[in-house]
Image (cartoon, rainbow, N blue to C red; front, side, top):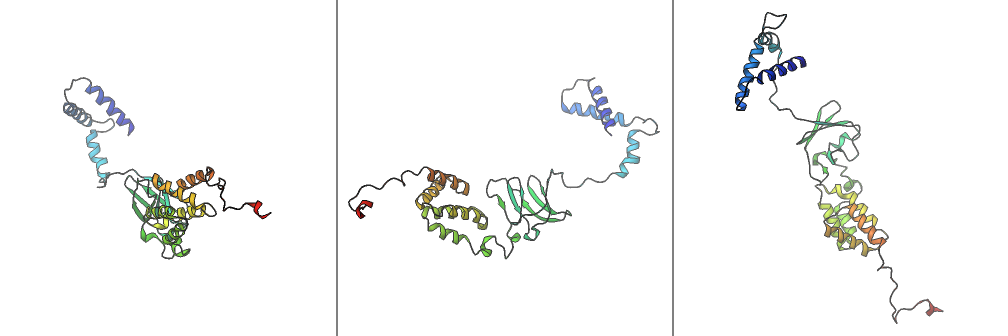
Length: 258
């Protein structure tokens, strides 16, 4: 096949060079004439022209082209679906039914769609492909286990649990946690971040924790990673909190008890 394409290209270009053209239309007309002439030539070893050979042998074997246009597709094999029943692709996580936990799947990504099939190429589910930086988890409600809503039923923790915990630290922390919980479609996806932030504050200054939370809100960066960075900076540079108490007549030092 490549030999005939090369032959056609060489012959066609050489013939086209013999004339001068004033438009693409005139070039196309002349090219069509040259190709027709080539197809009408008798082929060596046959008593038929190339056109007749095509009509007699090739055309009857040809099948109709499908009515769907060709689409580029990226294939990614996942050996084992993770326990949160999401499959990773292009910095996003797409859900599958929770019953596929620990099973092998294949993700097929086009420009507009994510299709996930099992190892036998049977369709499991589809998602619209996301290009937004947030949310990273693309989850369908029907994929979630009735008795495994992440931490909600299993650990008896929900969004209100984290809000109440945050309120004990301060109002700015409450606002930060509330923003994080509202930043995802399913608030269960934010429980890890909330849990990490609040545990980070255990045994540490509530004042600094609130200041760090306030800074995150002001910067529009209500995320675990930003809070951790800012909170650690506050803890490392906290000189004002550790200053000695001022002298005052109502303060008794250790010398009073001698």
